[in-house]
Length: 525
Image (cartoon, rainbow, N blue to C red):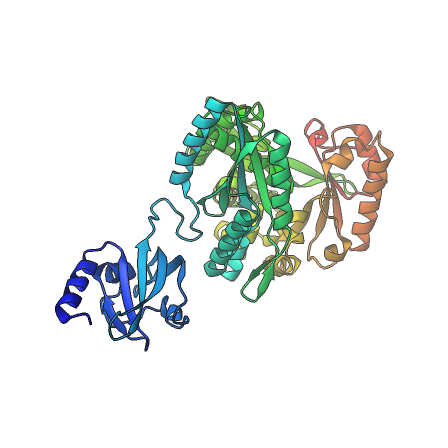
């Protein structure tokens, strides 16, 4: 029999261990806990049975167990530990105890949600792989993954569902990659896979396609089934860079190209194309200060009513003139503004400036001229957009019907019911609504008849070759007929020549807009 003095010696020895120790008798009553376990678990009472280890008490007497578990403390903090369970029977007396030993797993360099390597550990591993590949003349690939429409999950279902999606995505990645490959979480919904021991670029592409295929399967978030795909960018050592940051940056840039091309696909690094990345960064930095420095301005392109042969309004076009870089095309800075979130602030400025211009025209004796303002997807989808429009109209004291808001098909098609709700609220204020760039997107008749809009704007791509391409001519005529049947006005954008104007007139378009008007006298026949 073990004497009381011997028991005290054993307990003292166990208290010196850095590993947590928990001893339970066959009735599930805790007989001993050392300080290491209490500190590790966050509980400060030796008699408390930890919620995360209760299930192990019910294991059969002689069943051992070993594996990784998560300990949740009283304050909600979590720690990853390696647990070993074994049964010990006293030599004299025959009483049996379960011994649970908890070994702390160092998680400083692991992502706490997915337990994948984090950015710091990833860089350390990449440096090692890079040195080894340089020495052995091996190639390896970096896949930069970003979940498509992840923000939608967080915004609609909540962050707990977002975390569950991230966890399942990480598990799906690990399950479909060999152990020699590395999966890491960069942060947010971004992951990186390092593919090792590749013989060719084709090997990396094959694995990438497998990942895309796996992400085509639905995720099950508690009781909700959801489809979330991924966009992937790929860089290959040594062809796309010979430094860690360069390889990651090139893969990141390729991933963004995959997103722009429609998501749910992969793109390979384009080193030559990435030469523009620095210029893009410069533009972004200057754009953040452009409003404060009064570098942005609105130019107004006239709109001509073909029946009355008079100017009835204008479209406000955003322009940026930098003191050093000169005039920067909207196609260069508007996508950057949208991706960085700057478009919200810029859009607010455009809306208020256009309304102030309408008021000035009214004071100058032109009380019926309207102004069309382009609305970005970020503006349209933000909470309180309708109230913002109402506030600007009240502040500038203009007639609401003189303000026309232009939205695109893409802003509507993903959530038609919500879009209809917002548009109805805007119509109640009294503003006019037009569908911009019609014909280039989804052009669905099923949603078009439901939308409370006033005008369709035929995209300039149809007008550009309307005098040489029979298809463009036919489509313009068909769109015009469709719009009129739905009691909508039609504006033809991009009219630049007299011949284009003549054909547009014959197609029964109501209004034209384009540089032809800018270069002509006010009376255009």
